Length: 217
Ligand code: ADP
Ligand code: ADP
Ligand code: ZN
Image 1 (cartoon, rainbow, N blue to C red):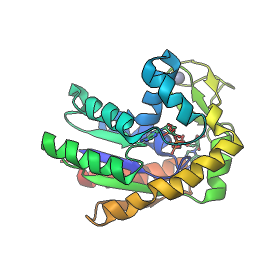
Image 2: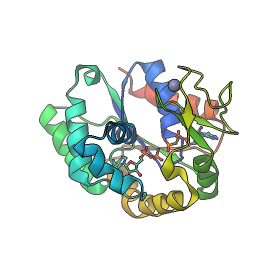
Image 3: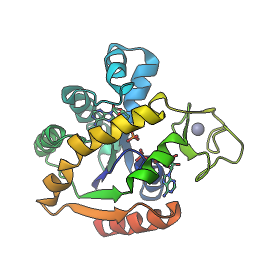
């Protein structure tokens, strides 16, 4: 089972994926997490990616396509994976189609999580992320039990640099211009299920879970 989570920054892709991978025992591929780990390590890839990420712009297609193609060949992806934050451009979607075709695999479903823009800004500017395990929290809507401490691993929570208001606004423009065309791209092959992402985290989780149950063998 190969599922893409599509939606604007702040839609809740990471929050839902965290729960879905546990429930359905799937591999998790989040390009943002992979790129942030590269930035932290200071590798050449990280040094290049950082320039784009801190401005709220997209990292070049070749770079992320390379990362995902390699990741998909790992053994934990054999039975299924959730893609979060990839593809983000039509060029990435086309490259993914090609890679999957060569592997004899296909996308089972694209879950598009739709959320109002005003809500996205409140979510992103209040987001906190675990330095150790990348679990996601919100200061009001999904607070950890102990302030600034991860419930899952005890790691320290931090605010992403690109979650500042000005960078969030830039990311929303980039999303509108470069990523929304994917709704149509996948819509043409009838792969898209739209979920209203404005409600309660658990309610949305149960709605997305029912989509996954349909796709499960
Ligand atoms: P994405 O991965 O799509 O960028 P996240 O899962 O990181 O989004 O969620 C963005 C922020 O909004 C986080 O702080 C998260 O805790 C919070 N959040 C996620 N889903 C909801 C929801 N349904 N209601 C309120 N806040 C949410
Ligand atoms: P969010 O959870 O807010 O949607 P991500 O963690 O997915 O953000 O991505 C953070 C940043 O990493 C993006 O603003 C972009 O610079 C880079 N990035 C992540 N995924 C991709 C991708 N598929 N293509 C290009 N850049 C990406
Ligand atoms: Zn943690």
